[in-house]
Image (tube, rainbow, N blue to C red; front, side, top):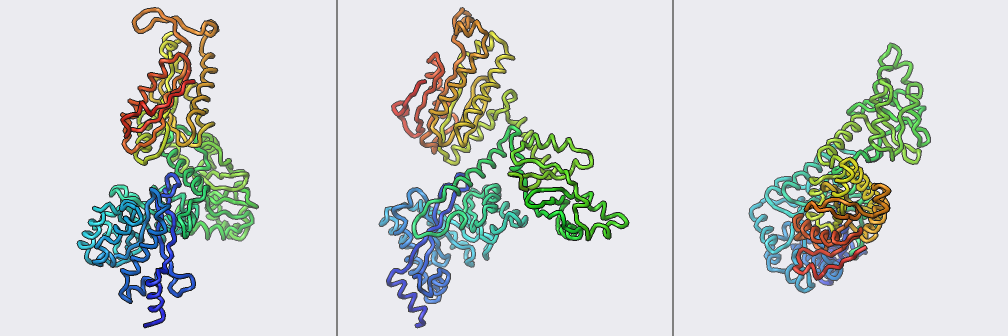
Length: 600
């Protein structure tokens, strides 16, 4: 027996496998969705690396023993801290055929450690050659029926390709690191991963990107709609189930929020910096021949940004540069002379925070000779990126169409379709949230006395007031205009009491200004009620029905609206601005007893 074989036998007999756990992160909210259990041999052993361990185990015909030991050690270590997260356990495809694997060994371990089969994901590498798909699929279906989940690992790097995905119905696919590395600079990789993401959505499979090592890769993967991420940038394998850095969680949430805001935008209030892309820049002393070589490598027309000491000093228009080169003595004159002789030393330079609307206005105000030149974007006065006119037109067109199609025409806020989309997203993704239904009391009377034009002024002012309050007191929120004097807001983590009090305070101050001096002194309006009888109506106030949704697994838009209507009725029974906050659990049949009302 070789020295390595003896070492393997020692490891198996003395249980010398150490598990480490790498987080798998939700790329929507930055929370840990699961951990992948990885195995290591003894630190000072020649079999420390798992690839050596498993290769030798196969040769020694003890693959099952090693696999079972790795699984046991991982479950033992994770049992007390896994919680409601999932544990991905690597299983060699060949082990699945072993009769010992079929004898409920994993089920017995789970029972011993008080874990559920629904928490376990068997991760099977695509790199393993699978010849008998029918038997393989039968084995997997057996485990899926027991509530185990299946993940296909290394998708895009193995023998089987899409054939494996067509034959098997996994819950997850893990996209190989080879496709993820530098994906932000490789259009072919981006196209492949996008296709995998599109396919997975159609097939109801969740995608996991492996090997994320740079923030640029993370950003692009979120934009492509990849569900989960894993890699050293997010978290390294650790001997315990570690938590994520707050910065990573915040970064993911911010990127995802910006993506959603862009998808759902109804106003041109995005900044130009959000759509800028970075490109290679050159100093002003660069020779023309260097620029020619650079432009020859580009697949599309590209302007060249000239930067000295981090600050943009000019723009070399693609058209103008080649126009000069095409003259009789152009090449001899400029190829070995600095490009500053040809650059526009007064290009349009915009700060990162400039709105897209303002950027469009300034771009179109330029002379006809430079109308199609790229915009240069700076942040803290340093070069940040560029935006082509083509990109600017694409974005502004999309935003305008979105706004026109789905926004309330009066306030510009998202209308009912977008409200429905947003609520569906919260319900679908099980995102905890609070819904605030906002209604103006005695608005109809005001509208009848002062006229529709004045009524519209009130609605627009209310929309602005709500938007400002949410922006000031929340980090993530959605505001929609249901119609008439009804609005709705969704907030994520902030305490709604602070927001509601701020809205009421600001509205009560502003509402008075909509009335004549006489009505302000009287504090009421005399008008006819619905029965045609004359009645004194108080001045406008605002009612807020607040629903803290405890569990949205069984929530529907209809049930939420019905519950809100009941609370709103209580609010409107009070003659002053107020809010009532109630906890709402759709699974509970005793919501009324759970409620805790607050009146202001």
